Length: 324
Image (cartoon, rainbow, N blue to C red; front, top):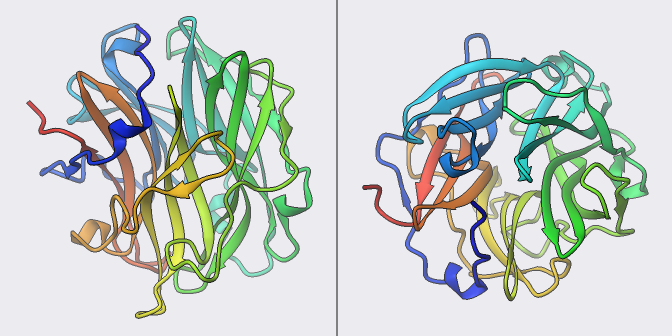
């Protein structure tokens, strides 16, 4: 059942709390990470269960849960797939994700190896059988590419405004020396009259790093957008370098916009910053957020330390109200 669109003011003053037994999902065997969760609530799914999709270094995984807290690995889905977003319309599920050459993520840390990725979509009526992938967006603008690091469009987020579909996405790359890997540099928007495209990107990014802003002085990271009755709300994991420690970080910021193009930070402090617990010591990363039973659920992944050779990433949960 579709819920009524929220108002912008509903997000101001919300009390968020981390779920005590965090983290909820650990990396699968052989992978140091499980990252970028996207999920469906029981009122959206054919079987009345919670469904969550996240990626490891091997590709995209599917998890299920009866309560949104205790998760079971259901199936490994696709190789060469990461940073997914699941969208539902007319009882059809659309799984958007960043597609790259299979196994390339495992060696992406090698110097001089350029990255290439595009955004694709698969369809399903039952969350079990998925269609073949269809390309929605390829790197096609100058700011989608870094001359040294490669070309990337990633982190899709699909919203519908009237009869138009907006695809928010990350683009290009910035290198984090203390981590030894790259993160997204810009956030852009592409529009289409149909879910499956063709998507036409705006000529310039809508969010970009600002050297003078310590919240986002390295990279724009990724964003999940909610279309409200009176505007748009965005949950961004911005990439920054601390002016004190000189180390990189990522925190979840709340943004608002009248038109979904010009964005401003809703608060001077992040919604969720790293450092509170060992498992989220260095970075708090990409996320998905939805309202269920009058409570906003925000699943995210976090990193315990910086360098790729030592760090591990888990998935946790933050909610706007105490869980019953």
